[in-house]
View 1 (tube, rainbow, N blue to C red):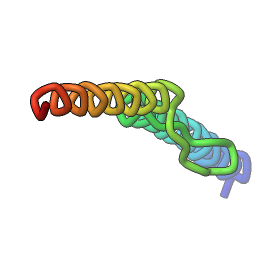
View 2 (cartoon, rainbow, N blue to C red):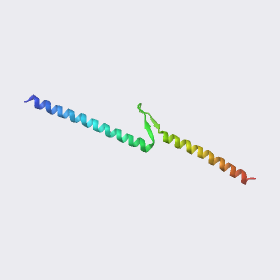
View 3 (cartoon, rainbow, N blue to C red):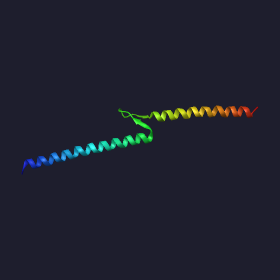
View 4 (tube, helix red, strand yellow):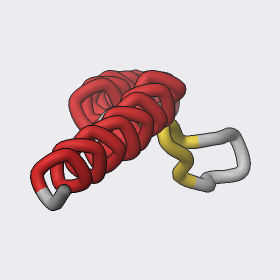
Length: 82
């Protein structure tokens, strides 16, 4: 049997597997980026999930609005209870 043909076939298979692995890794990375964007979370390099800055800002704004609403309700109730 010709060894060069076997070596060429093995090399072709190995290169194909490496290229396939790179393709899969890049697709997974793109999907993770899309999921992070949709869920408004970030995955840190040490694989911790943290909220995106936009999510934290939105939470802070909603808490501020909630406190404002409570104060307005309290004022309204105070005026009507007199």
